[in-house]
Length: 210
Image (cartoon, rainbow, N blue to C red; front, side):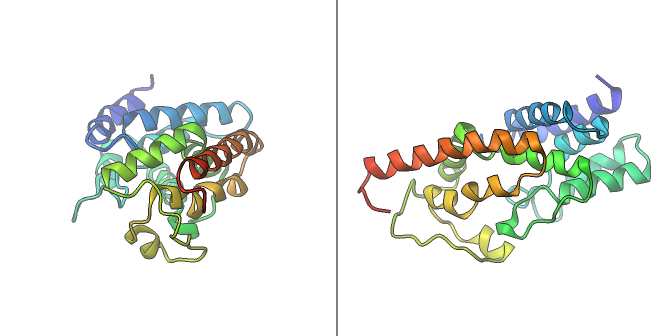
């Protein structure tokens, strides 16, 4: 592995190992695998893509402590040009969904990282991560009386503790239509259908009403 990538991985791994299972080191490994798969069909800077993947959640608002800026700290410690650092930070800014208020990718590298991360938010692994995060935050498994929000600010999206099942309707089921790359769209279609089947079964096994 490139020395810069190894240095970055060593720094970020310690951080992700303190997160719950929805955003831990295994999440980063899966997103990296997704990105490498997409890179097989896209012409992009694989070095920048991998660094952005490694760093994309170290300053996630869900885990970031007050006054902390781990993303900048780690980037500044790496032997990168100012342009490379700026590019990586721009990619990271475009990754998050933000309640539908996210930034559209401005480069193929950003498109790949966004797709790679969103693929890990859907399908079987997306289901597992949703309930892992909900459990870590003490949220209900489901609440069929809850009305999924169709429009919200980023603050509203992050602040209201909706049930894990509601999260599917507010985010996960929307991601298929926001994929950027042809390969990402193809993989997302299968994972989307799996989530629909899961929700249908979950409704059947609970009170039968959505």
